[in-house]
Image 1 (cartoon, rainbow, N blue to C red):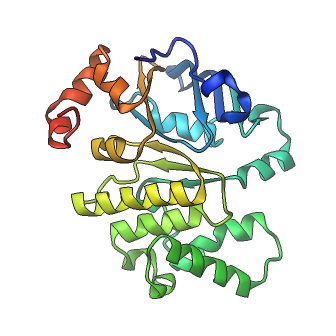
Image 2 (image 1 turned 60 degrees about the vertical axis):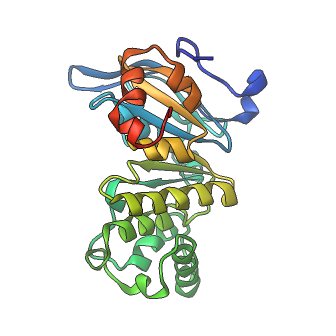
Image 3 (image 1 turned 90 degrees about the vertical axis):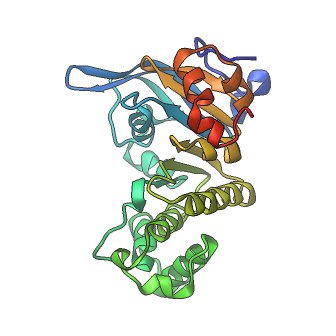
Length: 270
């Protein structure tokens, strides 16, 4: 059954305890341009949710607003039961330790080695941690994402695009978060590299019990790793549901996107 997004889609039974992220009435924009208008969405604990939409529909804006990089014009954002708009500095500091973020291309600091990049959240969030312990954590996180031991001493310029993204994931996991935000994680990767990265995301999601919010345009990723998909259009979440829901939808953009040539090439709906 299609879930048109006039009302927020909650977890089975409507239990708020099963909701990791709850957004209500979110309005956000830049200058005189409104990008998101009274948007509602729920992300269930433990799910992998993909966010899709046409160019300029506000996918990355939504993610960046949830994590606090954009200040919303109106609405509320709750993460793990905490209303972010009502937290003081120290409370906000504590809740931010419970999520990790992968920006496009990894967004690593070019002047730091890969291991030092992974250690940045540790230095910022945990004062006084011994260097030897930070080195051990960085080494473990890099191995967790499939990077060789010598990757830690290399600079981002010495890594391939796929390796930089894996290092970015390792940094996002440095503080053992409960939620992982991914912004176009497979962008710029060849099909083989993208498939391997999808496999990594799926494995981390399953093994670590993460809640994952992934902004993507990659149909293969949506098909292979996502539990549910949210479609952004007209400044709102117009539809949220499984891949089957997407294929059954009569929403114009959704139908075109999930039934177009690229979807057939990905084996979706075939």
